Structure formats: structure tokens, C-alpha cells
Amino acid sequence: MTNRILLTGAAGFIGSNFARYLLEHTDYSVTSLDRLDEAGSLERLADLKGRFPRRLDFIWHDLQAPIQPRLLRHDYKYVVHMAAGSHVDRSVRDPLQFVRDNVLGTAHLLEFARHHLPGVKVLYFSTDEVFGPARQGEEFDEHARWNPENPYAATKAGGEALCPAYATQYGMPIVITHCCNAYGPNQDDEKFIPLAIKRIQRGDTLQIHARDGVVSSRLYIHVDDVARATLTVLEKGGVICDPTSGRYNIRAAEELSNLAVALSIAALLGKTLNYEFVENPPNRPKPDLRYAISDAKLRALGWAPQVPFGEGLASLVRSSTLPAANTS
Image (cartoon, rainbow, N blue to C red; front, top):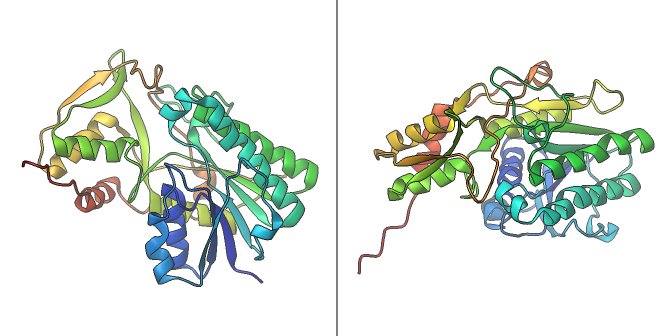
């Protein structure tokens, strides 16, 4: 039986770290399908290709177009669909691009799997943002009502909505995960933690979302824990066959305010935190202050996060560098 995984978006942050985890800790091989854009870079895969030349393949393809069968000639044990537009600010500027990437792109992947990969389990990697903001004390389970409040979240919900339709109508084995905010090596600078590291290193003012005295908070999970969770769902999780199965939330152990995260980064850097609270920033007019999901179903499969936030953050800050300023 084949031991190869087709991974879309492997040149992105989470995808490349998942590929690394598979190649370093399992005997799976990986075929990466990616179009390479501002969010996906081959630099993230270069070291892996050098260390695992026979176990990592790369195929260029933009999922806004159908997948041609001649592109993918291997047999696959699993398909993991991580390719997506994920920057909320960009989705606010260009929502139609995100519709094409996250809804149409998912449809093209599912169509390819339906016609050419019968019986192969497909994992759709979704986000906790499809459930929308959570009130204090509230957590959403896998079947909570969707309430996306930005174009990125809405288009991820749109792609996700195709999955039970394909599972029901075509008998495809499909599973869905909802992941909270991931952090770790090689993350895009537009995300809060790497952005905070850069700005605090420079002594710049960091903007932190807040409203009516309530500071934004997130569940920050290390990307290695996300990789372990994804593999657990592939190997042990059920698939969509009725309203109660085939969906798993991936969440961190601890919820943290973004101010507390920024203060931790400043302390690790030995810097003073300069910050300001903003309620309606121009790049994201109505930011969601809090997301929260429960992960009892995933824990029942034997998974639990292993990287404490303080440990993961310290490692990330140590590995982050800032080019010296030109003083000439």
C-alpha cells in the first residue's frame, strides 16, 4: 500500500511544518501541490528537499484551475487540503480573490479526488474563525452554528460546506478540522506573533486590538502540535457520514490576551513594549476579539498539545533575527 500524502499548500507556514513533521517523524512521503505566491515559498521546503530528496515531490498548480490528472501520477494514502488564502487583512481588501482560492480551489480539489482518487481519505483544514467571535466564557464545539465575520472566515466556511455535500452525494471519505491560531518557525510576518517580534525588536509601536476595555485574545498553538493533531485525525479520526462525526477541533491548552503575549515577547527580547490599543484599525474595520473552541473529540483520539506556550515562544524568539540597521 502507498505511504504517500498529497498535501496542498505545503509551501505555506502550516503546510511546510506539517511536511517537515511527516518527513522527520514518520515514513510517509509527501507530494506538495502549491502555486507559490506571497504566502507560499519554496524556501520553506528547500532544506527538506535536500534531506529527503526521494520522499518529497513538488508540483506547481494553482487550484483556481482544475487539476489535470497527468500532474499527479502517484497513488496516495491521504489528501490534506491546507492551501488557502489566510490573511484576514488581505481578504478585506480583495474578498473575491479569497472566494476563488478558498471556495473554488476546494471544489477543484474535491472534484479531482472524486474522479481520480476513489476511497482516499481527504482532510479539509479549516479554521475556528468560521464560528465567529465567542463571548467570554463561551466555547464552540465542532457542530456550532457558523457566524463568520470577515471574508477569509466566510470563504473557509464556503469551502467547508462543500465537504459534507461531496461526502453524502459521492460517498467520499472526508474529515474536517478547525484549528485555532498557530505559531512557530517560518510564519508570515503579517501574523501577530512574528509581527510583534519584529516591531518590538525595532522599538516600534505595536497595535493591539481592544474594544470597550476588553483586549483581544487567542488560543495560540505551536505548529508542531498542529502537525501531530492533523496526523492523528488522518490515522484515527472518523469521516463525515452523519451529523455527529468526521469533524475535530484543534486548540491550544491556554487562552492568552494579545497584550500578555506581547509583554512576554518584550521580556524575552529584553526590550520595552511600546503599544497602543486600537478598536477599528483601517486594515480590518471590525476585528474579532476572541475565538474559542473545545477539543474533547480530538483528545478522545489520544492527542493533546505537547509544547507549552512559554517554551515554544522562547524558542521562536531565540531563532528570530533582525538585520542590523545601516548607519552609514
